[in-house]
Length: 627
Image 1 (cartoon, rainbow, N blue to C red):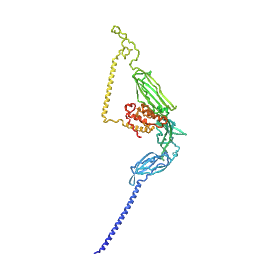
Image 2: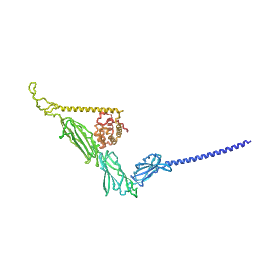
Image 3: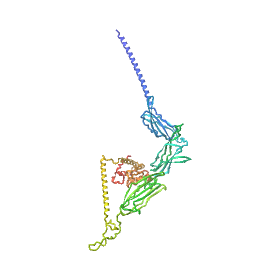
Image 4: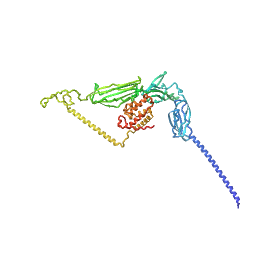
C-alpha cells in the first residue's frame, strides 16, 4: 500500500512536466505567428511598391528647342488605365496632340498588357524646364528636368523657312478694315508635309475677321535665293477703340530630308518644324464725334446707283401699271451687314411694294467690298406726276480723311391716264350721223346728247363693245373665278388633313424663346454693370429678334438703328453708340445702362398691337437681371 506522501509527490511531478510541455508549444506557436506576420508585411510592401511604382517618361528627342514640338511617351501596365490630368503642363508647355496605343506580349507563359501614351509638347520658354509629374489614377509619373535651348539655335543647313506677317495700316478707325497678309517662304528643294497655319486671333478688343479668298502660290527672290511662297490674306475689322493686339501666327509642319536608296532604304529623315511670328499692335481710333451720332460708315469708296423698268421711251408711267425702281449702294472696305437700308417712303398717289433686299460681300485680295440692292415696285393710282425726293448717304472717306456724301437727285415721273380712260379736255360739240330728231315743239335740236364717259368721240361708234369682246371677257372672268374657288377648296382640304394629323399643339418656337431669354438676361446684367462693350455684343446678337433683318446678319449698332422705330429703345441705342464710338461727354466717363434696361422692360410690358414695327416682339420674356 502506497503512502499518501509518495502518491502526492508522483502526481505533482507529472503535472509539472505537462505544464512545461504546454508552455513550449505556445511559445513555438507565437514565434511562428510573428514570422508569418513579418513575411506578410514584407510581401504587402513589395506588392505596393510594384503596383504604385513611378512611371518613367521617355523623351523622344535628342535636343529640345523652345517652341519646337517634341514627344514624351508614358508606358503603363494593365488595362483600363485612367486618362491623365494634363493641367500641370499648362504653365510651361503647350499640348499639341496625344496618341494612345496598346501592346500585348507573352512572357514566361503569362500575358502582359502595356499601354503607351505619347504626348506631343512644345516648351514655352528656354532654360531648365521641369516636366511635372502626371497622375494616372492611383499611379503617378516621375518629374524630370529638361534642358530647352533657344529657337534661334536650331541648325538651318541653308534650308531656312520663313513666316512673314504684314499689317496695313498701323492705325485705323473703329470699323475700318485692317489688311493682314501672311506668307510662308520655302526654299527650293525643301519638302514639307502636314503644314498647318494657325487662325488669326486678337486681344484687347473685339474684331470681325474675314478670310480674303483662296491661298496664292508664287515664286519670289530674296537675297538672290529663290523661294516658293504660300500667301494667305485676312481682313480684320475692329469693333472697339483702343489698342488692339494681333496674336502671333504659328506654322507647324514636318520637313523631309535625305533620300531613299538601295544602300540606305531608311534614308528619309522627318524633323518637326515650328515657326512663330511676333505679336503686332494696332491703334484703333474713335470715330469723329459728329459722325458717331449720325451713323459711322468708314470706306474707301461708296456710291449710289439707280435703275428703272416699266417706263416708256419718254420716261413716263401709266396709272394702274407697275414700274420697278432698283436702288443699289456699292462700298469698298465695308461688309454688307454694315450698309444702311435704302427704302425711301412712298410718294403721294403711289402704292409701294418693297422686295427682299439683296446683300453680298465680296472677298478681294485687297480687302472686302459690299453691295446692297433693293427693288421697289411702284403702282401709280392716278394720272399726274410722281415727285421722288433726293436720297443721301453720309460716309467717311478714308482716302481723303473727310466726310463725304453719296446721293441720288430728285426725280419727277409723269403718269399718264390708265389705258382706255379719257383725258380731261374741253367739251367739243358732237356731229350727229343721223337725221335730227324733232323735239316736242317740232324743231330740231342744236346738238346731240352728251355721250357716255367711255365712248371714243373720234370713232362715232356705239358705246357698247362688240359681242365678241364681251363674250371673251365674260369667259375669262368665269374661268378666273373657277380657278380661285378651286385653290380655296384645295387649301381648306390640306389644312383639314394637317389639323387631323396633329395630335397636340406645337410650342411656338421654344428654342428661339430660350435663346431670347438668355440674350436678354445677359443684356440686363451688362446694363446693370454699365458694361458698354458687353451690352453692345449682346444687343447685336438680340437684333434679329427685335427688328426685321431681311435674312441678313446685323453686326453693328448703326445697322440696328436703321431698322429700329423711333422711341425709348432707339434713343437708348443711340446713347450706347455715342459712348462706344464718339467722344464721351464732360464728366461722364462711364456708360449709364439704366435707359436701355427701362426701354427693354417697357417693350416687354407693352401690348403687341403697340409695337407693330418690331420683329417677334411677343416672344420677348421679362428681364430679371442678376447682379
